[in-house]
Length: 78
Image 1: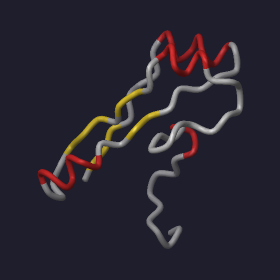
Image 2 (image 1 turned 180 degrees about the horizontal axis):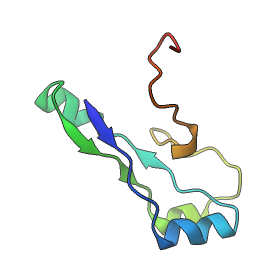
Image 3 (image 1 turned 90 degrees about the horizontal axis):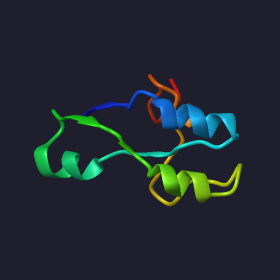
């Protein structure tokens, strides 16, 4: 499964100026439905939800911050 991260846009930069981050969600249900040869784009969290969340709070369940993703690492950390 290949997942593309959405590119930052103006609203993401606006959130960064006030010290907040926007989370993304990976569509793993596509993997289950279509198999391992899937190309998908991660879904961005709503701007308003990210704006209302307090600074430095963990993202909602099932969501991650893009800067916490380490490309190229598998479950062994290699």
